[in-house]
Image (cartoon, rainbow, N blue to C red; front, side):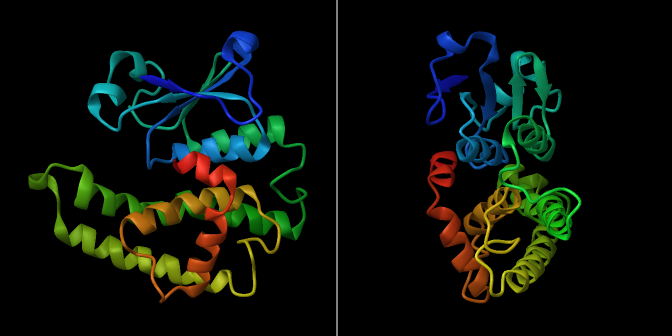
Length: 221
């Protein structure tokens, strides 16, 4: 595991001691969401970079942190969390101070929660199958029909998101939120898989807008 520099505004780990948030991260994975969120909120962190390979993810040391050998994980002064959505909600509750999410109990917050969870619970299912059956699994374990069906499902999701973005800068309206971070990662995969196209003009404009944010750029570097 290699260590990279902390977030903008972060101090060196020697100064922070045990309180420095550790993020376990691998390129092009869900851990992008957590790095991006920390950048947006200015949360100091220490980045532990893992190779997306068994030698790191299935190592004895990392399996003690995440028994399934997946990313992201965080270590917040001894508290270990693994799920990207749970980590995001935890960090928002601890550090957000009302930023990046609408006021709880409002209709805006309800819509925010919808898209926050849609990103992982609904959209990531076909994207995960595309990844598994086109790239991750050994060739003899890939099922082309699964990849084809997942691609059609992902395109349907993109159509839904495209419609929801009509007349909006962000998924919840004009204000950027953590739901955009959750959904933005899905679009990172969509681009990698060649799914983004002129068929989804609102999505394309939205993704370009997200790409201009320094936090996105840092997380996807």
